[in-house]
Length: 82
Image (cartoon, rainbow, N blue to C red; front, side, top):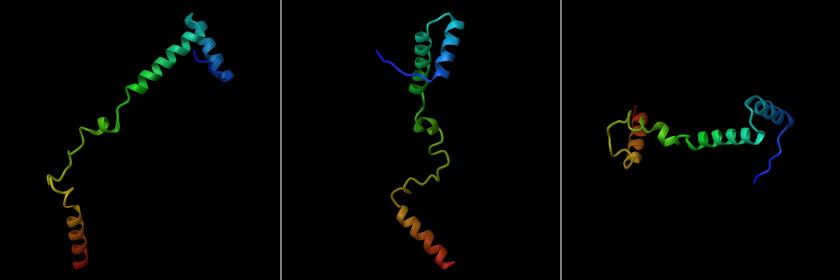
């Protein structure tokens, strides 16, 4: 069992809702927490949100991650020469 302290304003709102819905305050709080937890647990990860974009705008070069130092040096040298 868990006990919580609520600000007066929230408790008054829960009382109004409970009376309107013909439910107990405890039921209203359980429903609200259940909805919050479902929403929280169903959130997509950053990977899931962007997975359809990964590689979509790639260069097509598969060795960039291995050759990045060489690529950067080349770009710097190009700027120095020009």
